Amino acid sequence: MGPLPETPRVTVITMCKDRAWCIDECVRSVIDQDYPDVEYIVQDGASGDNTLEVLKKYESRMQVYSEPDRGPIDALHKALAKTTGDIFCIVLSDERFYDNKVVSRAVEAFHKHPDSGAIYGDFRLVDVHYREIRVEKKRQIDFEEILCNEDFISPCAAFVRTDTLRENGKPKSGLRSFFDAIGDFGLWVYIGSRYPLKYVPGIMADFMVHGGEISYGLTHCQAYIRECETAIDAFHSETYAPKDLAALKNRAVARVYLNYSNQLAGRYFSEPIRFAWKAVRRRPGLLLTKTFLAVLFKSSGLYALLPVDTDGKRMKHAEPRALR
Image (cartoon, rainbow, N blue to C red; front, side, top):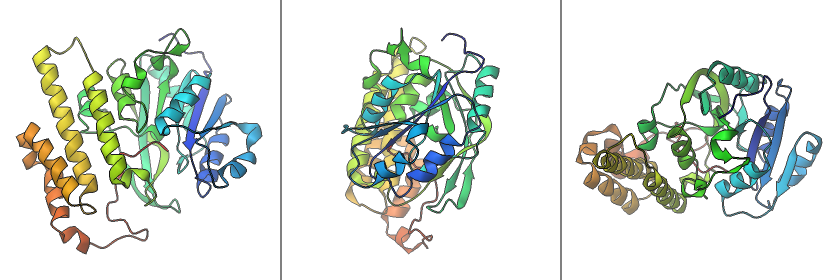
């Protein structure tokens, strides 16, 4: 990566489809930033509701593209091809920046940590009325934790150097083998295996928890698992001996299955059990983890007896979800 300009351009990308009910709040959080050079690209997946009518109110402050796509990451690739920023951030339609100084703080962090491929911070979990559920405090995460799904970075609270994904102004070859259609896991595997990822304390965004998140469906989870496996398989490094690399990949795949078993447990029966079994076959030690015990608890039927919040959700935490 080359050095950043003193005032780098920051591109904010929003991928959306049929999100008229929430996108206004997202847009206003972006266009109200106090940073002097923000490029805002909204990549719409040919919405059938009045999303585009909402966006039209702000057309002088953003670039809006509406066309069919194969999924949220396909939409991200379309938006990245149009990006002119030195840094980019992804803020989904049901998310928003925490305040109007987030972009300024991110740029300052890159100047303090010029070797970082990405910087990330904390975020709030909020309900559909943006009432705080809790603050998700992050920490410095190492690459193995990301690859093995033992911790995660939320895109809305992260900023990425555009150069990490480009070479001579064009997307680097092999990107789609890491992240293609579903979610952001492969993005962090790709960047984190090549560049430092720096944690910067402070709340950057609001991450909404609601029943309309498409990651709560079985079909999405099955597809996301396949994409995670593809990204894990695509990862290679001279840092690891072949035997160590194989063990690391096995650890990573096992954790993917266990995490998604936990996400589905309590709403489905056979699939969570099947995923959990695949996980422990690869790593028997996972039998002793809190996540595996949570799967057993939810699958037992006792989970259904727990009280729900005002939006009908029992799990108040940020789960991996599709970027849409």
